[in-house]
Image 1 (spheres, helix red, strand yellow):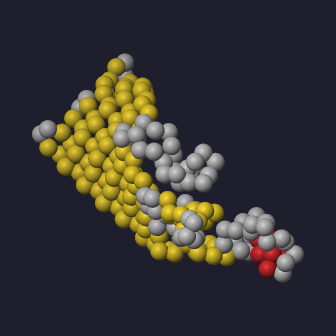
Image 2: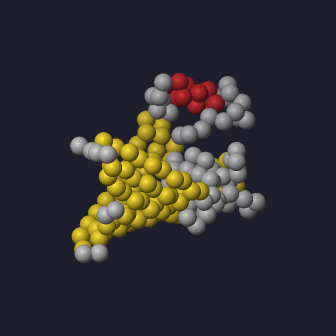
Image 3: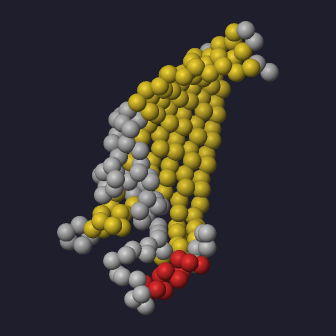
Length: 185
């Protein structure tokens, strides 16, 4: 049961622009989310656990966490940005997308001087190259994709694989080849 009360406030931005030219069609999309509040108050059994810990019925060494102000804490970024650019001139299409995940601190880790351990913002870029054609009443697309073009590593964190997997991926640069066939309507 999830009986906790979670309050989120913020705003989103979406900008889209398309341009048709003699050399091809260009598209730009920018998406962003900005949080200004992220609070969680325990409810139900979680409230009972918090009360029991406050009364000393549960040892202080047993964590009862995930409440209060969670903004920029343990993977909850204030801001996320996504940018998508593409060019298309049949039968070709080239696209580039970037994603930025904002800073946050890792609650379970503090530095020697008592300062919070901040995980820096990370931006990764992906690219795709498409070739499209029709054959036998079907639409075909061959795509070569490159994820994490600049081989950006996830920032270090005190977690299972040395990074904060709830927010970041650490696959490094990787390639894929995809063939898609769809029925022509």
